[in-house]
Length: 88
Image (cartoon, rainbow, N blue to C red):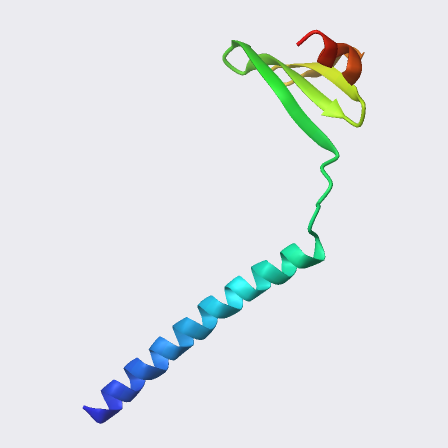
């Protein structure tokens, strides 16, 4: 019985140390990369049919209107972000 209790205590401490280690790694990762820069951002999606639509993607100071279909991706138009932002 004593060996069983010792095993449970060992298992409990192993789980606690594992959880603390996990959160420490997550915290350290946030400290190293506090402001991870996103290169692109999806602004909007318009679905036209199943597996077909238009996606607006912001990259730097440009907005790209992209047509997306099953086996095809096409750049439809390019805007300046300031031009699109004024109309909102």
